[in-house]
Length: 188
Image (cartoon, rainbow, N blue to C red; front, side, top):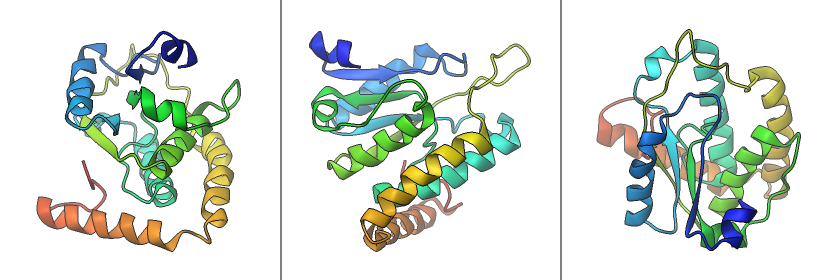
C-alpha cells in the first residue's frame, strides 16, 4: 500500500492470494468507487454464497456484526480481502501493519476508515470454492480470538459506542424492509 501511494495511485486494491476472488471483477470495484470516490469498496462474496463453507459463513456473519458495530455502519463481508481503498483516505488512516497482524489489520482498517468518515460499501462478487481452490488462511477460532480484543478496545474506548450499534441496527432494519428479506444482508 505504501509503495502504491508513493507511486501516486488514486486508489489501492487488495486481493487475497488464495484464488477465491476473480481479478476480472476489479472493474466492478472501480466503477463503484468512481460513483462514490471517498468510500471504501468491499468485494462482498454474496453471489454463490450458498457454496461457502458453513463454518466460514457463520464466522463472517459474527465478524460483520461486531466490526460493523465498532465502525458504526453495516459491513457486508468484513473478512473479504478484495477491497478498494481511496488513496486520500489511506493517507489519513494509520493502522499498525506487519507480520502477524493479518486479519486484525483488515478488520481494523474498516473500523478506522469508517471513523475517518468513509462509508464502507459492498459490491457483490463471485467467490470460488472448490476442490482445487487454495485453502483460506482464515482460521475462524484463532483469528477471531485475535480480532476480538482489537474490536473490544475500539468499543470500550467509545463507551461501547451505543450510537454505532444504533446506526448498525437501524440501517440493517431499513435495508431488510426495503429488500423484504434478511436483516443480515444490510446496506449494500
